[in-house]
Length: 76
Image 1 (cartoon, rainbow, N blue to C red):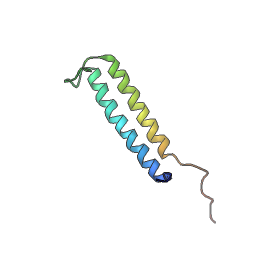
Image 2 (cartoon, one colour):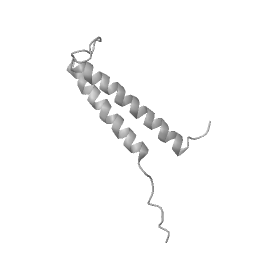
Image 3 (tube, rainbow, N blue to C red):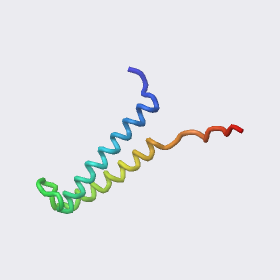
């Protein structure tokens, strides 16, 4: 198996970022006792972990989708 192309890595990191955001949101709402039904419900530490996961997911998506290199040359 060879090295990943830039597009494959971009897609992979974006999917991981989305998963972090989804899980982080669930953890946050369980931690603040909005989403019941788990051992995490009402435990503020899970709200903190969820917030960190959401931020990490956003950062991952932004970094995966930023442009690399300089702007293309202008043609006149």
